[in-house]
Structure formats: C-alpha cells, structure tokens
Length: 453
Image (cartoon, rainbow, N blue to C red; front, side, top):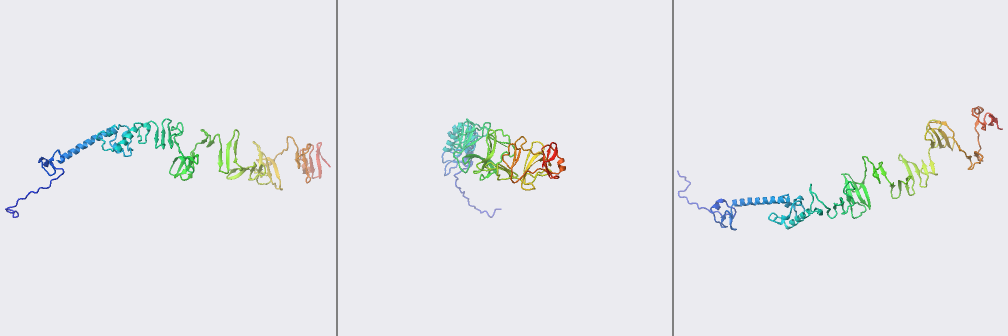
C-alpha cells in the first residue's frame, strides 16, 4: 500500500553546493583533484596558491618536531644542558653556570640551531664563555659548581670580595688583604673600610644569634670588640670563655683566668682611674691622679691609703701615717676574745702583745702581753732589752739613768703591799716597795728587807 504522505509525482531535490573551504581538506578531495576558487588541491603543494591536505600537514609537523629534537640533542651535546639557551638572559647572567663553562661556543652563530637567540644574547654568551676559558680573570659573570676548579685572583665588584691566589688571602672591601686565608698561619679574613667613621662601626664583622651578637671592627678610630643586641642598636654583655679556659693578653700561654703579660690593667673613667701593673721587681697598685686608694670586703671599705700617703684602717681620714681605729675598752682578763684594737703576734705560738684605748678606769691606752689561747695569762713586756734609756715626760733621758721621770705634776709611785705579800716575793738586792703594814719605804739590801727611813 502506498504511503499517502508521498505525492504521486514528487519533485526532484536539487543538490546544494556548499562553499569551498580554504583550509585543510581530506584525502577524498585530493583524490578527486577538486578545483576550488582558492586554488588546486594537491597532496604535496607546488604553488603558493595550492591548498594542503591534513595528512601533509601532520607529516610536516612530525618532520619538524624530529628536526627540533635533533637540534636539541646537538645543543645538549655542545653545552651539557638542553636548556642552556633559556639560561642565557639578556643581561648576560646564567641560571646554570655549567651551561657554557666546559663547552665550546664557537658554533653559537652558526647554523639554524641558534637563530632563536638575539644578537645581545649571543654576545653575552660569547663573553661569558671567553671568561670561562680564562679563569684567572675570575670574572663576575659566572660561579663554579661543586667539583669545578679555578685558578688566579678573584675580584668581585671592584674589591667587594677579593681572593689573592698568590698569598692565599681573602679581602672584603680591599684588594690588598694583609692576612693569610690559611688558619694555620694567621687570621682567616680581613675586612676593611676605606673611611674612618665616628659613632658607628667601620669594617665590621658580626656573628650572633636571635638575641645577641658579637661585633668586631673599627669604632671612633679604634679597633674594638663588643656585645650587641640582635638589631645592633644597643650594647649588651660580652662574655669570654663562659665555659672555662684562660684568657691571655700579650701571651699565648695564659696561666690564669686573665693573664696580662708585659703590661697592666687600668680601670676608671675620664676623670678617675686606677691601675694594676708591675715594674722590673715590684707589683704596683694605685690611682692615677690625686685620688685615694680604697680596699673593700663585703662591700664595705676596710682600709684606705690617702693621696698624701696616709694609711687608715677603720677610718676614712687617717690623721697620721698610720691610724687604726676600733672599739675602745680595757684588755680582757679571760677567754680568747680581746677588746683591744691592734695585736702583734709571732708566726708560731700563742704569745701576743695587744694594745687598746680606753680602759675602764678612764681615758688611757694600754699594752698587754698575753696568751691568745687564754687571755688570763700575762707575760713580760721589755723596754730596750738590749740597752738604751727610758724617759717618761722627757725626750732626752739622762745618759746615766735607765729610767727618768720628768714631771712637775706627778711622781713615782712604788708598789704598795703588806708584809705578807712582801715576803711572798722572790726578792733580790735593790728592790723597793712601800710596806702598807708598817707604813714604811723598804728595800731589799744584803739579803734582807730593811726600812729606808
């Protein structure tokens, strides 16, 4: 049965010709050799107006890629880095310094491999290669990688960093370093500034951590070392050998925590200064200028030498060449604690002579020979035991008088005792006493006591 929707005499449908493409056509169009308004379609183009098919383009791209791969391989062989071209920047610096140092650059301007480099890039690369072949110039256009070697001096940025290859020295800020770079022979590094500065460091070397730093350099025209805060804006403590070890000044073999050889120490400020030093035979401790020398213990002054040469112990203003000041009182009669001010003793034994001021009976002074282990023991006090006279109240005792008392207000008072006490004496001829029992002056004469009046 016929489809009622299809007319009995259907009209022919006229084919519509689509616009021709000016681009890549498929192989069917090529086989048909279709002529278009743009030109003849060819599998392999002959004329400029020929239209190329897709397969030809793909083949051409593959060929071009293979060519570039070959170029890259040759490039890699010549420079040891396929990306060497990218490492040559317009300014002439290298991202990978091994790109050119070890390889010839003679082909840089030859062939198609290097057409993508600009003239400036080629010139920079050629310069860098030239310098790499003459390492003695130590040019700043390159650096050495691990395993590379170089000879000759190195001068970076006109003296910012200088390597003296002949003397094995390193200079920062100088092209004439004065010290060796070998630790076996001297300092490792010399840092120098051509300008002397005031109030800030010149030629400074800094080492430190997050909180503090130690600085060495020139300050106010002097070589100095100091402790600073991390920002270098203020001074801080400087510790030397905190863990132990000795410090030597003027010596390579210090014998104590601080050993100053062939010199001295000076302390103070611009106005008051003290020193500790020595000469050929003596050690000297003193002040510079008209100042007293004070000795302290327990943060308290105990002794002073005044600028005019007086020594005071217990006093800041001695009145004579030596003055010892202490608590007054008479000598102790028992125990081991004396109440005097000064003691003279011997190197061995307990015999001592004590002296003091202000006994209980009034304004007086005393001398007492006793035993430091027991102050209730008393011993002889000798005056001029080897000879000479003693004067009381006189500066010139009579030559023939061993003891002369000169006074118009006082007299000689002899010992006063009872007869019983007198008889207990170990008497010798020449003794004089006053017998309080008989109320008589008595003397020991020819082996017996007799009344003198």
